[in-house]
Structures are given as C-alpha cells and as structure tokens.
Amino acid sequence: MNLPNILSISRILFLIPIIILFENNFFLFSLVVFITASITDFLDGYFARKNGQTSDLGAFLDLLADKLFVSILLIWMTFNFESLVILISAVLIVSREISISYLRLFVIAQSKDFKEVKSNRLGKFKTALQMIGLGLILISPLSSDVVFLVSLSLVFLSAVFSWYSFLRYLNEWIV
Image 1 (tube, rainbow, N blue to C red):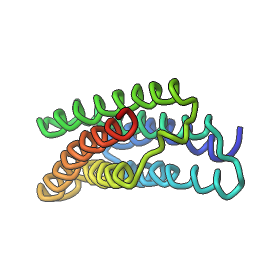
Image 2: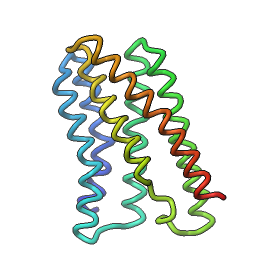
Image 3: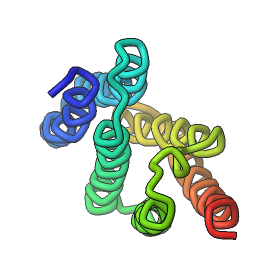
Image 4: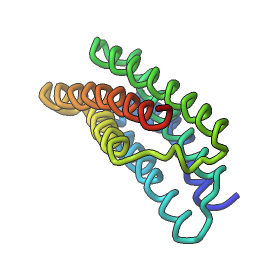
C-alpha cells in the first residue's frame, strides 16, 4: 500500500480521536486532529500525482474516505448537538453522498472510465464550506453563540451546494 492510500484510510481512522477528544472536553485537540485529517484530503492527491502513484483504487479510497469522514461526523453531531439545522444538513449531505456514489458507479459501469466522474471546482468549494463549518462546530463549546451560528450557516450552505452540485453532475454525466 502506498502513502496516498494510507493517507486516505487514515482520514477515516482520525474520526475516532476527533470524537473521543470532543466527548472528553478536549475541544481544541479535537479540532487539531480534525484539521490534520482534513489536510490528508489534499496530501493524498498531491503525493499520488507527485510520485506517479495515481490509480483507480486510490481515487476510490479518496472518495470513500471523504464521504465516510463527513457523513460520520455529521451523524455524530446530529446526536451530540440539539440543532435542527445540523439534522437537516446531515440528511441532505448524507443522502447526496449516497446518491453521488451510486451515480458514479452507474457512470463507471457504463463507460468503464473512473476519470469521467471526478469532482469539479464546485464540489471542492462545497467540501471547503463543510470542513470549515464542521471545524467551527468542534470548537463551538469554547466560543460564543455567534461562532456556532456561523458554523451552522456554513454547514447548511454546504448542504445546499451539495445538492446543487449533485444536480449538475447528474446533468453532466447522464444527459
């Protein structure tokens, strides 16, 4: 197994200390681990391209890690915070992630080419909003209500962008 694939898998494993640290009131440490995990999303692709280690398996692991990382955090946050906005955002984002995964499988089954279903800039922007919003939620117990409201707004906005990007992918890949 190469370094990029290890980084992708580590993103999933980082969920354990993020949640444990948060649950034990180590909010800043939880955020630091979250940021470290988020950086692996950039590094796995960077090292794969730099070292000529790109592969369909690596691309699949990266997508899987991204979806599990965000989905598990959102589901956990839904139960940890009493927020209808987090619940609605989680339902929208997780359902979009499942839908886009099946859409990708459909397109790959038709064309046999994984490169046809890569994410675009809108998907990357959506991911950035999600990561900033989720990170702010992790430190919200240490900050003012304004930080929590901003984080909720970012997560909800990312949910809206998630579905908008899904509809664009659907139009691009199927039509």
